[in-house]
Amino acid sequence: MTRKQRADNVFSALRKVITEPETELNYQNNWQLLVSVLLSAQCTDARVNMVTPSLFERYPDSKTMAESSQSEIFKWIRSISYPNAKAGHLHKAAIILENEFGSEVPGTVDELVKLPGVGRKTAQVVASVAFGVPALAVDTHVFRVANRISLVGPSATTPDKVEKQLKKLLPPEEWGDAHHLMILHGRYHCMARNPGCDTCVASEFCDYAERLKKLPSDQEGLIPSKGKYYCATRKHYFMEPDTISDRSGVEQVSCPSCGSMNVFISKTGRTTRRIKDFRV
Image (cartoon, rainbow, N blue to C red; front, side):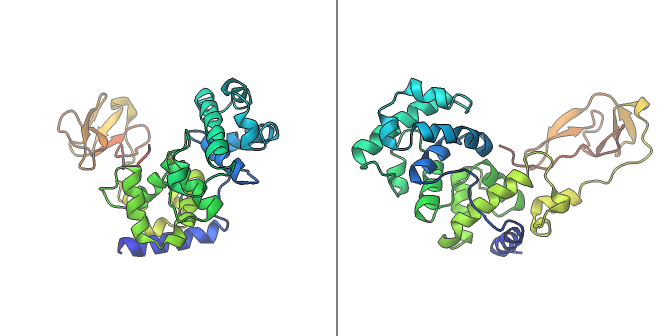
């Protein structure tokens, strides 16, 4: 299966269960979207949505926020991550919108990144959602999902590289939907810990799910009293393991006697082998 075929199959499967691939941030206009996306950096959309109703009532536009102060804005967003820094960014961004953009949120990525606190990812989200600009922002969810499924190659080790490779697989008009599909899939199904591979609609096309199936089966009849770990290669128990990095760079438990990674937990019979999960 080529990477393009994998992408077509995966997004087709995700669209069957995610019928409305869109942001979960609550907003009513471009100003509110910009503020919400800025606040969502390293913070959950749910938390942002709890804060913004009162914030937008106090600051319905950039003019009212520009006339305020960082310390005053801070009071309204104190439960958000990094509230002091974000309050400063919001205040300065509001002033720039008033002085340079006629109170309007600019519609291009190049203009948006000129605003304090607005990086490339935030700018792409705002440009795509508010103005329909073809963009594919890569956050932690998109990075994880794209790498796990193998929509991107081993060289896609940074968000920028993931973005470039994903854009080669999809026409520009599908970038925005792909961004939201991967975010929602990563948020609710392909989580950083304990992804739901058994019930995933895209598992048959997923490289990560396929590698999970190839892990050694559970060992039965192990005796925990003989040792915390069992080496199936040397067929003996031990208490303290060594560690070794495998070919993909994942640190694995290994037998201190022979160096084998064919090790099981005596209490559960489960393998200690781990697969690279691309958590960020």
